[in-house]
Image 1 (cartoon, rainbow, N blue to C red):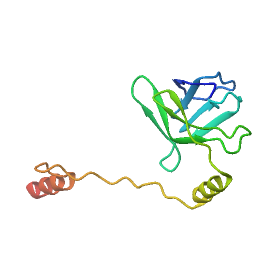
Image 2 (cartoon, helix red, strand yellow; image 1 turned 90 degrees about the vertical axis):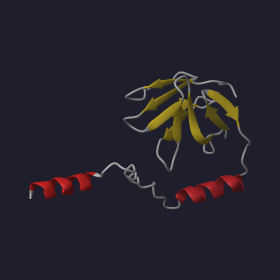
Image 3 (cartoon, one colour; image 1 turned 120 degrees about the horizontal axis):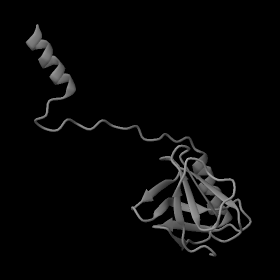
Image 4 (cartoon, one colour; image 1 turned 180 degrees about the horizontal axis):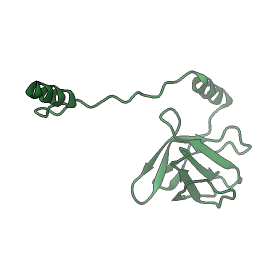
Length: 137
């Protein structure tokens, strides 16, 4: 791997020209973009979504999960970005790559947010409204 670390930049839009060693993150477009860590110069676009990639930010560095497998690029590089550092991952066979692509092609459903239960002893909004209505009428 040519790039061993990535600094981060939170941006509204991804710039047209990307420098090596910078991971650009656009929350407006839910996307992270960087140049491939192997040094081939190919732009790597990772959509941020529950069924795609997620980003971690610890106040100092960023990370992406799951790993980045550039199977469509000539380099076929495979790596993680964890806390700003590149961690080389094992190469995958053509069979494993195809199985992963087949799994990715299956319909997915992003998790539906579940409302948190009311804290014990704290009346819910509905209970407060019903109490107010009882007192009024």
